[in-house]
Amino acid sequence: MLPALDEANAVAQVISGVPVDLLRKSGYETSIVIVDGGSTDGTQEIAMRLGCEVIAQTSKGKGAGMRQGFKAFQSGDYDTLVMLDVDGTYDPGEIPILLKALEKHDLVIGDRLNGEMSEYAMTKMNWIGNHLLTWFAVSLYGVRINDLCTGYWAFTRKAIDRLQLNSMRFEIEAEMYTSAVRRNLSIGQVPISYKPRKGFAKLGSVRDGTSIARKLIIRRIFPVPIEEINGGS
Image (cartoon, rainbow, N blue to C red; front, side, top):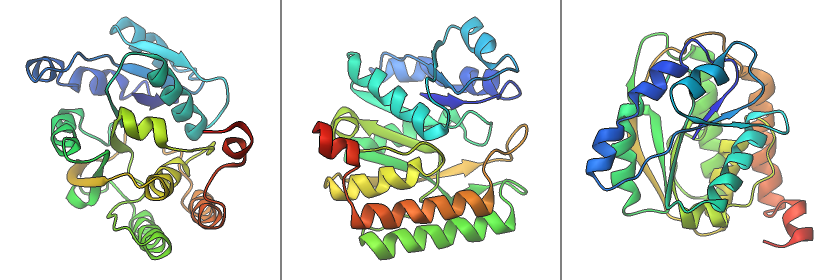
């Protein structure tokens, strides 16, 4: 699953980099799905031309798109989901590494902060912010994680079915961590490579960092989203 918004500069490279043949040899039947947040630069057209399914978001924001993608996953006959941002920062060729770790866990994250990070891939402010937010999350929830805000995750169906989420924006990764802890899911971590993104960054270091910290606090006080309490889970 590839969440995207105006990523025409990188989407073809990411899609073509998915090791479909290797995954098939390992027993995986692979589908590549773009969850598009309303791109106007041709991202959707490129993805469809390359044979991908495109899900058009009905609400704005990365979190809303990912939750919509998760529901689509649940409605299908799938066992495993790998999610990575489609901005060129993550190497889809590393998917098998996450899947190998997933054999022992319910979900696995790709750890940028202890992996191979290219020069200029992350600003100094974002590097500090990522470490601070990760430290804050571990302090609040007590379960070790090395990179809270990574955009590279792998999930079992059990994990997707048990996560309780309501995030609309970039706080979605933090909420996935909090929900995984609350739902007693096993979290694995593997170092990954991280490169400079292609195109303009959409994550605002101060505003979005504040939203992520707020989500960590809210989920510490109120572990279950309101709609889950009202509608059941």
